[in-house]
Amino acid sequence: MSAGGGQMVSFTKVILPAVFASFVPAYLFWDLARNRKVFGGTCAASYADNNWQKETIAKFDSGWPREAGSPVVMNPIGRQNFSKV
Image (cartoon, rainbow, N blue to C red):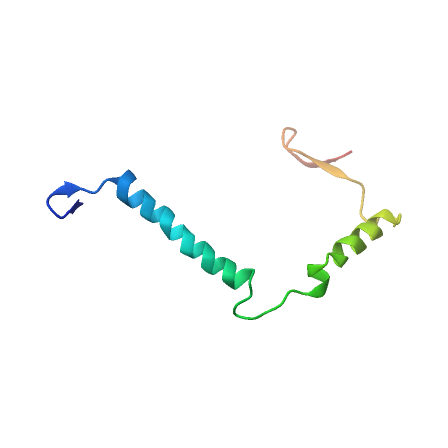
């Protein structure tokens, strides 16, 4: 891997900075497309203002009865699939 006059390309002086420099435009394009919405698109209102999170926490805190079975823990040492807590 020689460049011009038989000199070796230094990994730390040439290749590594070039790789890191390629991250900058990649991040900028990603940010423009994802966060700035330059290609259009919107976020759902319930996602943007966290209404879903408030409602979910309210449902958990309201004392709903448990619908699942009894809790279990993995027990790999005893080579059993589960053991009841």
